[in-house]
Length: 108
Length: 92
Length: 159
Image (cartoon, rainbow over all chains, first blue to last red; front, side, top):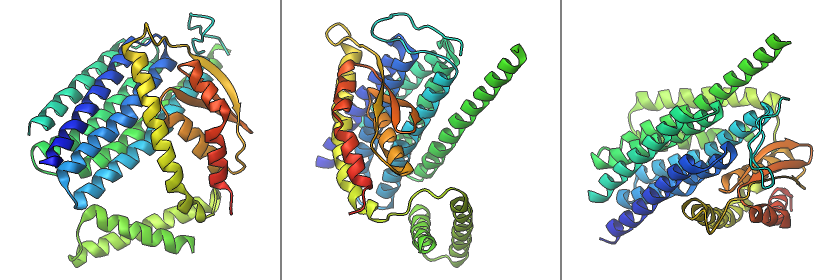
């Protein structure tokens, strides 16, 4: 019973965080800002989903597999977003910063 | 299980948003970012769906998908970098 | 030594993932795949020698615990930025931060931790500086205080 309740809480939290990330992906004005929205969805949202499923699975091999999925996601997602941002930066896409409100592309 | 069903629906909504951004994204990097997020959500969707149908074997697929998604994103980025270098050489 | 430890780790990983403990044909195939992975990692290690201080693994859980709390706090901050852009306006900032780690592995851990924390993402690493993009200025200020930097440096130092 307690496990079911915890599953509810974690899955709902994960869903809300995921939709938040997606909404940020839609509304943020700039590519570099969108990366942050996606990083919410990749870190805490994924962790909430996996934890919710762990409470459903109990102690078995399935739990270990779930934790392996989570570890993989937490290692690969910063790596791929770093690679993405670095590629955009190398290609000359400049970030919109505080002072200048226009995201300007500089030919490098 | 109610909660698993709600989670599946929420994940599908998130994936819909990601697809919209992938179609709309002004820069190609926005598209890759959206596809990356789509992939991560697919991993979670496979895991949750496996629990929904009470077949936890699906988790193997989701581990596999996480690896393939990562490699795919890196490969696409390499490809884009190559094309841009090639374009610069062409312009010169 | 390295290969033996990696071999034990890989065999354990195979057993956990497959869940087959008794079928001898499958066990033989698992052994074969473990040996193949060992050969590949030996070949990689011959070219790129990263780091070989095993005590880092013992110190890692404490750092991970601290990092998880930071990730949680940062998540809440960015969620506020997304839902209430009026009250918590975004102010994107780019800044080069110094990093005091010596080894490649330490630098990698630091940059990856920055990227894992929502609200900050590292985009370029040169010699001893990392270029960071943050969605609000406060995040950069917090990173400049250098708590994460010091913790990673402490993590990589041999005691």
